[in-house]
Every structure is written in structure tokens, then in C-alpha cells.
Image 1 (spheres, rainbow, N blue to C red):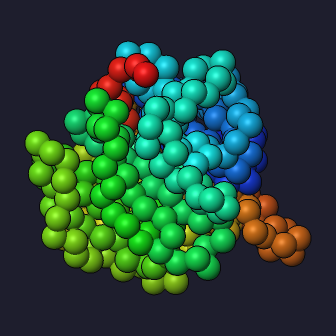
Image 2: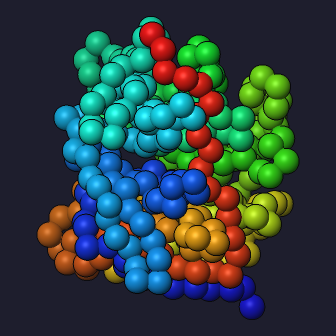
Length: 304
């Protein structure tokens, strides 16, 4: 029988659009954001549960952040990439990186983002109005701060994850139910050979992570669950997230890497739907019996 787990709420906070969970191993901290509220939170995790250590509220939406090897953070915020200080100061990167999602009418914003195993920062954009299909793109920021467009014609750029050998990448555009798989050139970071990896039923893929057995965990947005897929794309396990309408992302963390943290949101829910999903917006957690890696820091250094 396929394994099934049930996640439980672990936060007192309630996010409109919780996203971007990342575990910082060196600091033993969980980082996650509330995108449209522009909120970034850092928390500790122990047998006593979750303890929010600090909160920063920005003056713009923030899709995700990651620590920088030389200190501070790199953020996919508003319509571009920016340096983020822990006090909340944002400084846009110079050139094209600082305006990666800029549009004349301000209709685009940055969404999910993360670093690959070499410390390159991948970030996607999307339109506020998702009926504008193909308006976004996926970009890659290299440590020298050069920006490369990886994919055009993206609608809701979302989860990204690489296998342990770093020669395969999985990616989700939440406008469709398919998780895509690519081959990766480790020297350049270039991807090729796009092909379907898994197709969700009754939901779309959102944020993703992998475990130490090279299985992929996918937030099933609209399905109140996280799915576990083996390296061949077969569904081999499910985490139920009861009381939630929008599961948005997931990440392994904790002292031994054995806790799966799951972000959720309540964006777009009318009062009746909100009442039917009383735990929407809460951070959830479950121990599924496997471990997973923490985040990779951005390998570049801050300079103008």
C-alpha cells in the first residue's frame, strides 16, 4: 500500500500566500515568505516546536529569498532581484537582474526562486493576472551577476529542484498540471531535453523539493496534499494537509533534515471557502521517515 502521512499546523502565523520555505543548515533556521504581504520570517525548530526568531516586512511582494555566501540575502522581490539585509533594506541588483520582471504596465512580479547545487540563483516571474498566459519567464543569475533567460512563455513560474547528481532538473509552471524534467550541463547550468516527468490529477504543481533518496516532493495546489514521486515519475506517497485549500511549497529541514515543512495560503478564498479551510495560511510539518538537504547559498558576492 502506498504510504500516506498527515501534516499538522505548527505556526501561529497565517499567511495570505505562504511560499518559499528553505532550511539554512548552518544557522539551523527555517526561512519562508508571505508573498503579497512582503513578509519574510526566520524560525527555529526543535522538540518544543516552531519559534519565530525575527520577521521583516518589505514594502513590496517577495517570492523567495536565499542566503548569500558573503553575507546577507538575495531576494526575488517585486519586479526584479535585490540584495536584502536582515534589517529589511532592499537594494536592486544592477542592470537587467534588478528589473528581471519589469513591464511597462507593472503587470508582472517575481515568484518562486532558489539556488542550484553550484550556487546559481534561478528565479521565475508571472503576471498578477494569470489569464495572461505565457507572460513570464525563468531566469538564472550566475555568481558574476550575469543574467540568462532560461525559459520564455511561462505563466506561473514555480518550483525548481535538482537531483543529487546535479545532472537533472525538475520544474513546474503552475498553469498546467505537468512537472517537467530537463537534462543539466553542470558546467554552464544550461538545460535541455524538456519532457514530462509527472502529471497531477485534480491539482497543479507548485513548490518542490527532493529527499536524500532522490525522490521529488511536489506541493499539489488545489489538492490539499504534497505528492512524493520516485525518480521515474511514479507517485509513491502522499502527505495530506487537512483544513487547507492551497498547498504552495515544501522543504526538508530540522536538525536531522527529517522534517518536511509545508507552506499554505488562503489567497482568493471567499468567506465560505475560508471557513471550509480553517488552517489555510498556516505553516505545517510532518516527519515522513526520510531526510532531505537544506538550501544552497548564492555563490556570488555583493558588488555593484
